[in-house]
Image 1: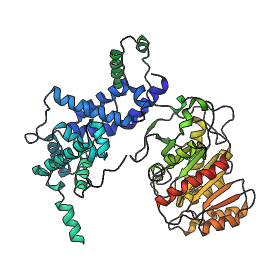
Image 2 (image 1 turned 90 degrees about the horizontal axis):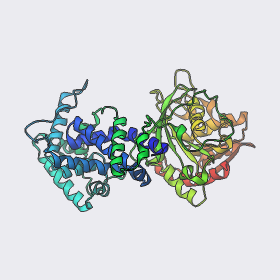
Image 3 (image 1 turned 90 degrees about the vertical axis):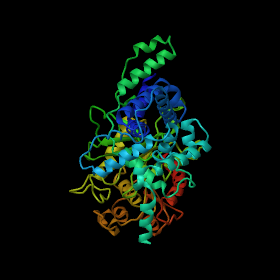
Image 4 (image 1 turned 135 degrees about the horizontal axis):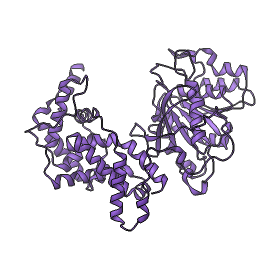
Length: 180
Length: 342
């Protein structure tokens, strides 16, 4: 790679790293695997960087690699996550972090862990990265219809998860009625 | 980034979005293992193209993007801005914070040498900048000031500053301007800095008119003369664009004011009094400056107060105080700027 390619890749890594790790965290459920996954994805992007940067969509390519690597990870070894048995490791109790917020995060991650990897990726990309159904389909290499049906199934499963009551629409909607 | 389609965007999704954001936002990742990524990426590529021996020796790590590495260099003319320090500032770029900002807009953080202000700066280079046909060519600059308290991102997201300029450059009706949108608000946590240097507040005027131009002069192929530089703003940023351009004709040859106002003292909490009114400034001096103001009574008053060589072009009215309307004012402003900055 030329020095410009290197420089652009460096800037790409700096700009995307934190967001990438956060997405990977929601996909994997723990920080160690998240950073590992993010690093693997960027390594693959580096190997094809000259082609990727010419494509004008390096972010879409990066997402696709991230999701594919994660699904590979699931295929190669059984995930260490179980929806009910154990809660995923918290990423460290931060100062001033209300304990119930930490609990909520753990419940959320446990609920996400109950989804199959592709369904989980659809939910995370649609509702965390705010991607359109089309962009999500591109990242997963599937049809828009599959994204929509997987999103619906994933949401239904999340809503049915016992600890996730605070996330259901009941509370905010009731609050709206009270004010009206 | 496009918004989700409305059918899927049911109200309860908000709770899930909130939960996912709460789940991920608090995470503070370790620093990016850049050296390991590059090392692994090189190994992977070597495996793919086994015979490329040249790559083996290329163990050069680039720790951060320095703008100094961009192709080409600015020929001749010394920067007309403030004195440059012997060691050029190294600039590292990252993605803009707002996901609505197109990918070709880059963000950097600058610690201004003159103002002492640290803030964000978004830079967009026209496609021509990297075109071999333009190698060694220098480019005119439009500095975009957002209204208070908007982040500079809004120029490239909601206002579409770069996306609207591209087709105009493509069909030859606008010059390939370099667009730069610096942070204008909350430079030091203040409510309103008035785009001025005021005791007790950040030196906003020095930041916008010295430090930001200096960054471009030092690191980009820009045309250094003031007749190739413009300030443009909307609302509060429009007032600032006019006033700062009047105050600094050694840096700017043109100003675009989209729905601005003249008297800063009419703004609640303004740290700048009537002395900052462009009408007052024009009564003292008439610099070589061309102003484009969208038509409201203040624009008419500005035109009436201007004397040669200062000129004021009053453009059709864009009344509502709304980013969508300001957005539509941009193509006209770009065409006018093309006449002024060429």
